Length: 260
Image (cartoon, rainbow, N blue to C red; front, top):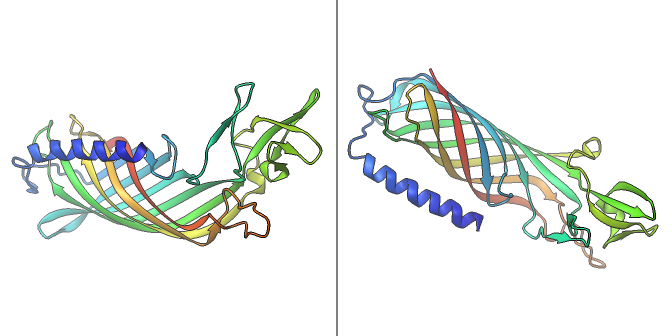
């Protein structure tokens, strides 16, 4: 469903662009001449929930042009939550929910450096600017334990999901729901990988000094080992089976910011 939503938004945006490009050209005399564009955004992708993470990016104008089109140095930092494709929320009788079988979160911090090229320039306040982006950088993977709330009688506590077998602990405590997302950061492990993305950025804002728009693209990411989010608990199986070290995703980022 999330993938379908991204495709529909891309199709709608493309149709808007096609109606504008006949009057938008890459000429500097008619378009924006701002040197720095700074934005913040929220992002969703095919490896996350509806809210996948947050991002910061800055584009700074470079001297010269790329085949007659303005070019920018592109810097970005994003923080996202990467999910296992088999994550399913289980409901309990009390209405609480938790992810059955999940043992770890995977949060990724992605600093990125690359180039942004202005493909179609705005020539009016209500025009649309379209840019192409290619960027890459390191991926800092934070593998944080997933915590569950358990209870026995009148006592309750939170424990790492690795201490739970099915719906109970070895001492007979029963799972009552998911623990806080902030628990367990002190027990996190790190993995450093690489990422590469290609994207189109559509600026839709109506005021020249402010910018609002969407960035739609495709990202690949690789880590040196498979990241165990949901372990394989079958007898004799490798716990990493069914988990990946190479991730691909389509993503959409809604951004807003300013230009100067």
